Image (cartoon, rainbow over all chains, first blue to last red; front, top):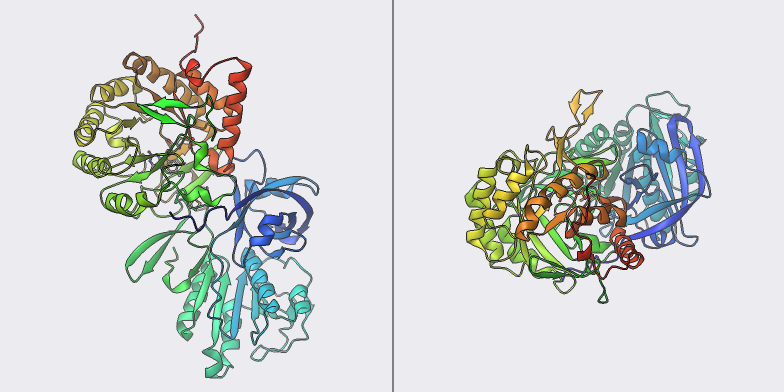
Length: 292
Length: 311
Ligand SMILES: Cc1cc2nc3c(=O)[nH]c(=O)nc-3n(C[C@H](O)[C@H](O)[C@H](O)COP(=O)(O)O)c2cc1C
Ligand code: FES
């Protein structure tokens, strides 16, 4: 019997502990969901009941997970009916959380220089992964590039961490990552102070170009963001011959593998395949993904 | 589950409870066991995903979309093919927990017959004939909306098996009762009423349909009143032949389930409701037991078809 995955997803009534709005219709919600928090791994998501008025849940990436206090944090952008209703929920109310869901990032063949590229609502999985990496001992030093075309949902802070290959004046970082000692830079076309003016992939390229070839061969890319960005990241990885894992999003109904509603088309050695983003993903090897 | 008065008989099979998990919502029977608090033991039967002779990749994304009180889907019968289902998937299922029903589809009458034959030679408990899938170009609803073709498919499947045959009817047709009558004459043992209604959603920025297949099948609470009327209508034909019905379409609560029983359903299908609450079956079971006690009924069969119409 195929029982290895039995009882791995929990349904919890999670109390809203914090719900903060930021510019650009962005919200941070912190929930008490101890079972999800205990079992989650970087790359996992939860399936959230935003409101009783909706017939369906919404998948949301995890940004921070605190097993000790049983808390999870989600960052979302209000863009439709579901997230609009969610944004109206108050601290003290409860939401039903299903989680943790999905295959996490594959981290067994750790490369020494992980490059994490997050764009827009693709930022949370990168923060989760960065926190996980900084907690690991060893010689791993991730470099995180975050891009956004609306104001970042945190105050920009000049970084004290020196990174080679970064244009002068590109000094802004995310305070949380700075506190963790994780190297990070921000990119945007909106001319935000201290941010790289251009695409995340351009900033990544400038970093890669100044590396010694032996260092560059130890880079692995992890990415999440809008499809055009992921396409560009996939091309960058191919150009430099680097392994690359991407986190994908798709509309979901069940989020447990039951409906095949959330598929992505992959080109594999054995031909085309339709894989479910919820349980076969959401993390996939970029080289296999056929972006629409 | 302990023996209780939720046990029903359906096409000669004993079901733990009247609940049937619907085809296409629960993969090949085991996916929901990922969820703590969900158990196949809480349901009488589980219908597997629609299966064709050869494997199908299905439709391009997006395949699903939330709509008011429901959802559209156009999966396009993605499945690994009947041989793989019978040889590789069925052996992994735990038949001690519940019963499993195959859901058979095809582009030709011969394909329906062949797939049914493959399942006949397997441990599957019953076979559901899906002549109502709205999301494939050939077969499916094209057969289900034509009583002659429906009867022809049922006869072919009947030739291929002695296991209980359940025919799943489409609501997208003029007279569902005529179709039901023809399927009964052709040898079906049960009926499933209803499959999804055809619908569309449009992205007003791109002016394209949201669904990759352009159109999809509507399910969930939005279709419940339609489903209830169809069950009531089909029951008028089926009861004379003692043919049981799996009522389905938007059922989310015990109250919904009871309405369908009163309208004439013997078993209760749960599909879309699982997506919102994966532990909904336990709640429906509890509500059903409660209702039986409150109304001092011995078991659910005392409720089936007890609707009294206004004069
Ligand atoms: C995502 C999805 C996939 C489905 N796939 C199938 C299928 O393969 N075969 C079939 O006979 N019905 C299929 N159906 C129809 C359901 O089995 C059921 O008849 C219908 O959804 C109405 O019930 P509900 O409102 O409780 O979901 C599917 C429904 C959904 C939502
Ligand atoms: S959302 Fe149902 S299979 Fe992924």
